[in-house]
Amino acid sequence: MKPESLNFFNQVYEVAKLIPYGRVTSYGAIANYLGASRSARMVGYAMNASHSMENIPAHRVVNRKGLLTGKHHFDGTNLMQQLLESEGIKVLENQIQNFETIFWNPSKEL
DNA sequence: ATTCTGACGTGGG
DNA sequence: CCCCACGCCAGAA
Image 1 (tube, rainbow, N blue to C red):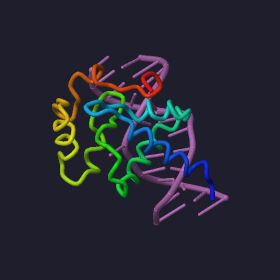
Image 2 (cartoon, rainbow, N blue to C red):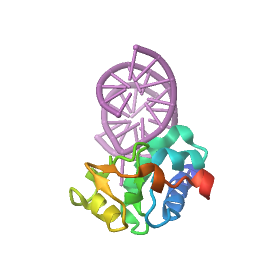
Image 3 (cartoon, rainbow, N blue to C red):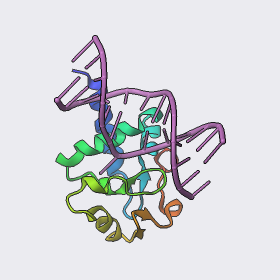
């Protein structure tokens, strides 16, 4: 077994769980926080596996533009957006409004 | 082992 | 801002 890689997924989940209510972050920000700045895609890949865990607020993780690129992976077509809006986050055309304002950077704020 | 894929990011134009 | 090409790396086939 490779504890390292297993840890990577786990760490991604840990950080995701720490995202404050009503805030969002990016895959790259999480990757950078974990010291794997070149593995931003792996963060997304990890989120895909996070389906088994309900404690992971995957809807609070978007790409660097604040675009809901992963909404397709949720059950409904706009479940991700609904979850975000239920937290007071405005979403228009898969784009989070005031993204820079509600953006949560783990490297800085954690 | 090899190839392909992808919930990404960066840099150049 | 948009578009394009490239790098990146863990899994799946």
